[in-house]
Every structure is written in structure tokens, then in C-alpha cells.
Image 1 (cartoon, helix red, strand yellow):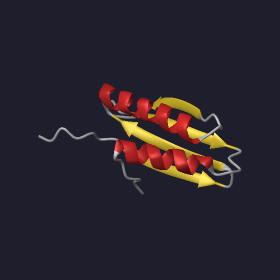
Image 2 (tube, helix red, strand yellow):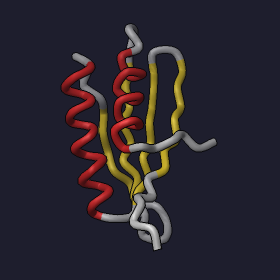
Image 3 (cartoon, one colour):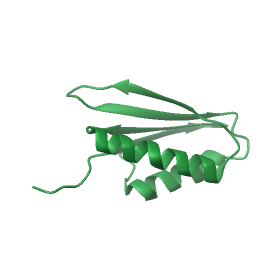
Length: 92
């Protein structure tokens, strides 16, 4: 059996608003996501995102990162770095 992570990503955005949801199953994946968020946010933006966690079914959880009033579209840089660091592709 492969030892790959099972992080799924979903993006939603409107003018000046962006949201990235990262679903995961394990504590290791949660740690990876939180570490990547800290690095990407510190490095790429002055805006402070709203970040919260919710429970999903089958023991999975989701970390949601939202940017409001993002006039300079800073979230795009943060989200791109997050997805690259975590080696995750957006799902439809």
C-alpha cells in the first residue's frame, strides 16, 4: 500500500474574496497543512486570513482558509504556494 497523503483541495473565489478548503484524514496531514499555511502566509501577504477547521464524514476534517477584502489578490500567491508545497491538485 502506498504511503501517499490524501489531502484534497477545493477553491472558491469571487471579487476580493477567496477560499481554499483542504480536507485531510490524519494528524500528520494536519501538521503538514498547518506548517505550509504558516510559511505561505508569512512569506506572501500582509493580509491575515480567517482559518478554521470543520469535521467531515468518515473521520476526515477540513481546514478552511478565507481572505476577505483582498484587493491585491494576495490569496492567489498564498494558495499556489500551499498547493505546491503540499503537492495537491484542485478537485472539481
